[in-house]
Length: 238
Image (tube, rainbow, N blue to C red; front, side, top):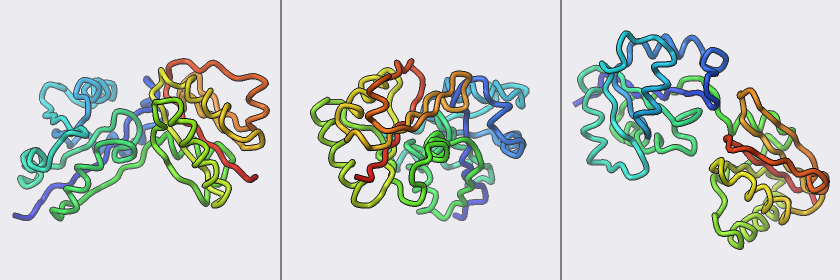
């Protein structure tokens, strides 16, 4: 059976209460006609859609949980509305679906089943951080999360610094907010003094902080990062 609906990738806010500043009007207009959604956390998704004030009742919307444990058999059932002509929207927990996000599972399924995929414009902390870092935007790699174990983390940082040097490549990481300071400590303690390190903290939020300087400079005055989303980037030219 041929799909007559589409899978829309819906951007969400990175920082709370920034809907008016970061979500394009075109996205909001598209949302008005969508009543089926995939989300990692339904409570977060409902709160986000409610903040946009475009639905008479959030209770009338249909949500399916999409996370890293979702299997293809479940996706087949979840995609049923698309074959009835309905569009389905994927909502990320933060920023754009499919980037460091389980939405990629549904997108892959859509391509396998010849379902139209429509990405909509919105904030991505990874790209915003790269844009504002001043580091190499021609060669870069998103590395996701660093290992939790400190020894493994330090080993990984050193390996990626070598790769950054060889390829002139910006390395990009995200982290769970409560581990911000530990990761920053590992980065500053492991990287070469002249490696450039960028901290992009609480992007688009009221306490947004973006700064790039050499590791030797960071060591003189290391910031204490609150429990807000952060992106870390570094580039080694040694």
